[in-house]
Image 1 (cartoon, rainbow, N blue to C red):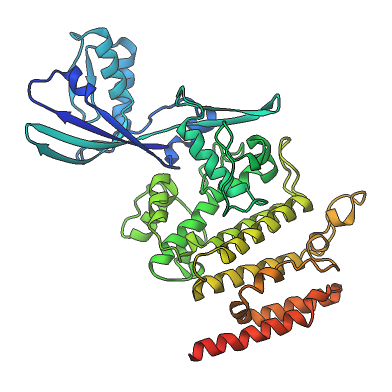
Image 2 (image 1 turned 120 degrees about the vertical axis):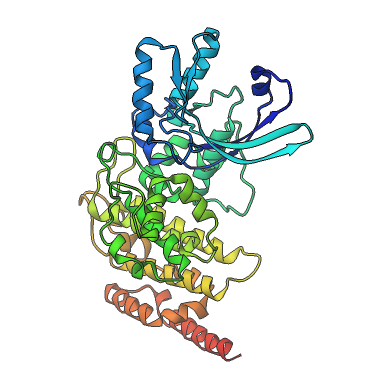
Length: 464
């Protein structure tokens, strides 16, 4: 969805055609589209139907279904009148065919416009509006070694700005093996060379994992026709709303979130929080706006928390043996390990490359996430898949920790020993399990000593 700003300037003695000629466009990108458009997107995202009436509709108007019914009647015989979104009826049969066509098309499928502001400048009245315009970008399987990308904007410039914006978002999510603090070389198609082919990159990463990282609704054959709420969006909505009250999301409004239901209407009478929750699920633009104004310390923007959520999603897919599509890599141990190692590298980047040290809150979040990841991997000391495959490709624990000194998690925890010391009890429990399996040398003496040193340092800092 693109938010386009339009400015309409009305001057004395101007014809309707010249008024339209004074429309000036200024565009900025957004990730949003409304739930009402999801089914049409699922069928054919290149058909850009505006199925909602103008948001500038009067409060006294009846609902949009009345308008849809009236317009469908006039479709049959191209009547001499047309009803507008404000429910006014206009005589148009005396106008040129081209003008009639524009008017009928505009009123039958009204643009989603909101009037922002208006003013008088000397002998001119100026009105500024924003319009939500849907764009669809498709990334097709490679032919002759290169993905074929297209955008519904039909912009002759390639790559267009919508494709550029989307590819930048995808690169940020999927690029694990490069130092993202350094410049990335962009190719002529508008994406970093480091990701290789975009289609193959997504197929290795998996679209469901990418969708959560992009805060996007994922349409699947199973979800295309149901009206079930997006569980990950519901989880993020809970994080947003609970942050307003500085509450733990798990403790916030269990009556809403323990069993999520959208209800028949968006507005929940006498319950503003549930109404806003339903709006966050229903309107993607509203969700991204609310998220954008959240504090950097809130969970919805906490990079360590978000990377941990990604790993949890990957491990769920691994454990449930969810079948992958024909074009995506299997949900196997090498795939899960690549995500985990990539997320841990991202966490190290978040800690190590900052211009200023982590705050206490950030350091604790990082340590909490790293300890959680270590615990999750240790609990996956079990073989998965065919016995004909090498065991290191069947056992996640063996692949990431095993009996070798790989410093998995340790090299990052040692960057924040004082914060890590706050999770000593958890770490000791994890180490007990690792010792049963045969712990690498790095998980003994030196590590425990470093953590205890951090505990003393943390206490000294508190006393200062």
